[in-house]
Amino acid sequence: MTPYIAIMLAIWIQIDNTASSQASTLLQQAHYEFLNGHFAAAERLFVDALDQVPETDQRVRAKVLGDLGNVYSEQEEFLKAERAYSASLSLLRQLSDSKNSALMLQNLGVLYSLQGRDDEALRFVVQALQLVQSAVPNDPSITAQVLTGVGVVHYRRNNARQAEKSFNQALEIVSTLNVPFNTAELLSYLGAVYLREHKFKQAEDVLNRALQMKEAEKGLFDPGLTPELNTLGALYMATKKFADAEQHYERSLKILESRRSDFATTIARVLHSLSNTYSKQGRQSESDIVLGEAAKIAGENLTKDSEMAQIVEEYSRLLKTRGQTQEAANLLAQVKHARAIADFVIRARP
Image 1 (tube, rainbow, N blue to C red):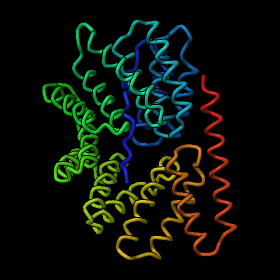
Image 2: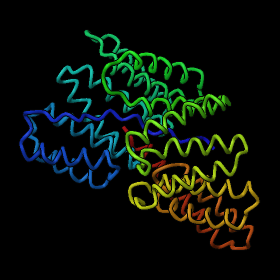
Image 3: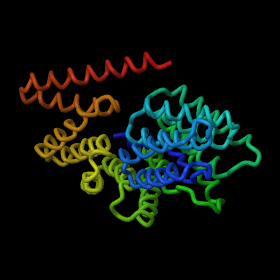
Image 4: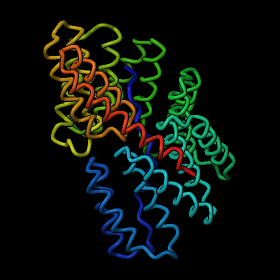
C-alpha cells in the first residue's frame, strides 16, 4: 500500500485589517473550524466571508480564496480547489505579491500531482521555488514550505531520491528558523519516502517523532494524527508486523469515525488497509466484512479519488467469487460511470 500524502497547505491565519468586521469574524470562525477538521462548516464560513469582502479588496479576497481552496483540497473536491487557487493566484499576481504567489503555485502543483497531472505539477512547483528563491529579501520559512511541496510532487512522480533531497533541504532550513513551522508534517512526508525506499528503521524513527510532536501539540484524539498512524500501519505491513499495523489502523479509525462526513475517503482507505491486515493474519471473514464497509463508503465517493474505484473493484471481485454476480456487475457499472464522468471533466478542462 502506498501511503497517502496529504496536500501541503499554505493557510493564512492573519486577517487583513481592511476586511469588514463581519468578514473578519467569519474568517476567524472559518479558520477555527478548518484547523479542527470541520471542513464542511469551514467551507460555508469562507464562502459567506467572501460575499462580505468587496471586489476592490483584492488582498483579502486572495486570502479567502486560497483558504477556500485548502478546504476543497481537504474534501478532495479538486476541481473546485483548482478554481479557488487559480483565482487567488491571479489576484496575488496583480498585487505583485511574490511570497504568497509562490505558495499558491505550490498548492496548485501539489493539487495537480494528486490528480496525476505530473508534468503540470512539476512545472508549477519549480516556478514556485524559482519565485521564492529570487525574492528579495528571501524568506526561509516560505522557501522551506515550497521545498516541501516540491518533495511531495517528486514523491508522487515516484522519484523518491529527489523527494528525499527536497524534504531534507527543507528540514535543514527549518532547523535555523526562529518562527513556527509544521515540522511534524515535514517529517511525516520524509517518513513516507523512507518507507518507499525500504529504509524501514529511518522511516519508523521519523514517523514516530512526527507522531509524538503532533500528540504533544494536538492531544491523542486529533484527526491530524492519522497521516502518521496510517503510514506507520503501512510500514508495519511492509515489515510483516501485522498486529502492529492493525493497532495503528484501528487507532486511526477510532479518531476518524465520529467525523465520517469530513473524512469519508480517508476512512475508506483505512478500512481497506485494515482489511488487508486481517487477511494477512488469516482472519478472512473479518477481512471481507471490513472490505465491504470500505466499499460502501468508496462507492459514495467514486468521483473523488481513483483509490475509491480500486476498493469497489476489489469488493466486486470478492462478491463474484461468492456467486453474487449481479451485485458484482452493478458495482463495476458504478465504477465505469464514475470514470466516464472523471474523463469528461478532464477533457472539459481548459
